[in-house]
Amino acid sequence: MKQLRWQILVVVVTLVIVAVLLYTQQSSPVPGGATISQQPEQGGVYTEGLVGSLGRLNPLLDWNNSADRDVDRLLFSGLIHFDERGLPQSDLAESWGVSQDGTIYNFTIRPNAIWHDGAPVTSDDVIFTIEMMKSAGSLYPQDIKDLWGRVEVTKLNDKNLKFTLPEPYAPFFDYLAFGVLPKHLLESVPPDQMANAEFNINPVGTGPYRFDHLIVENGQIAGVVLTVFDNYYRTAPYIEQVVFRYYQTSSAALDAYQQGDVFAVSQITPDVLEAALEEPNLSVYTSLMPQMSFVLFNLNDPQVAFLQDAKLRRALMLGLNRSSLISEFLRGQAVIADTPILPGSWAYFDGTEHFEYDPDAAINLLKAEGYVIPADGGDVRAKDGVPLVFTLVHPNDVLHSQIATAIQTQWAKIGVRVDLQAAPYDQLVNATLASRAFQAALVDLNLSRTPDPDPYPFWHQAEAVGGQNYTQWDNRAASEYLEQARVTTDYSLRTRLYRNFQVIFAKELPALPLYVPVYSYGVDSQVQGVQVGPLYEPSDRLSTLPSWYLLTRRALDEEVAPTVSP
Image (cartoon, rainbow, N blue to C red; front, top):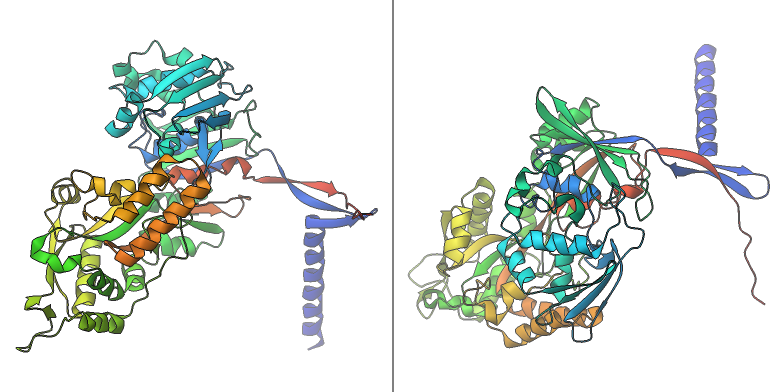
């Protein structure tokens, strides 16, 4: 018995010694009131398992390849970038100014901004890139090309340029975050040959990292290696080298992490989320995606005229158990949406009405509006002999089919019958919604790459015919708020205008906001300083990578004596 106690004592003493050593390594007092702390140190290699494959490392050509956009995020820079709230911040441009009428934007490029090959960044590079964006060789969407076709771009000098808009347009900042290309390296490449340029696999940018080499295994490109750019115009990153290795699935990337081949997994999809959470050293970061799911109503269909009743739409919202939809079908990987503006945005109004699942309140509201169960039996409510029956069209994939069926079941409990109609997503958007040939529709609105919340396209009166206001909501007050917010660059005023819009939306509910999905990203705990805010596209998760670090050094922090004011 004495021997056992002695062993316990040895273990306890050992643990105490280890604890003391660990503590003193983190923050050790030294004479004079100073402490020794751990500070980030430059160096190390960060390797990420990137889901996808390499296409072309060129901002003109990466629109449809998220893996390319991830790499390009570190190689190239735009005039501006956006913070986690969607507000524009300086990048290649050190400053800018906007005319009082909102039609002229002047930008000044940083004097110390240079390309990875040492050439200076000039206004000519920006203008060249815009011309290439508008060309047939660019993969930018046509609406972006059309916008740039209406903007006059003027070179003032090598470091200053001016954009003149035909009319005020506050969301114009969204179009200024494009990756700038080097004119001196690409001006000899015809636009229609840009896709075949050697530049695409040996790029030169202005970002915090420069291209080093491709990893080729068995004749296939297996990864890409980037090295810190020492002459970066902002603070140099801590991590010396970033390696992206390509994997076809999130499962394969997670397996590579488990084998010790990578430090991170670019996307943790729902099918591997549970396994990822069981990894003791893998920190899983989640962030809102730029996407929102809705049930849209056709407010201009005489066959379902009852959908024009705002109180009926409110009852349908109260009869929706959105928390159940998220937990059961999305494995908890979403948050409830209450307004058409993404949570976390500078324009989001948290004070808007929040709707909890309350089927009893929904039934009482329907009764108060004159909807009753027919005397001849049946569970469907009716008013003036018209039953509450309509068709919900939904994408024909498994997830949306499950959610539509759940909505059908939930609304049946309050006496509303919904018939389901499945359709391929492209057909649903390009034919059914575009022609307004629906009564209700389950859809996902993609808000990616548009940090400015501008709800105008989906909810303004002018977009009801031929535009994206598929519900054909016709509310003059809401439209006026959207009009004013679109033409002023005063963010305080825009915030108030969008707050008013959201209040009206919650009262009228022309569509029912369901949820905003989240993006999950796994990084080993050895990587420190990781922060992931709201995403306006998946590559935004790398926006803070220059401040991440793998190595630390012990530094002396002097204690500053407090000053006393006289």
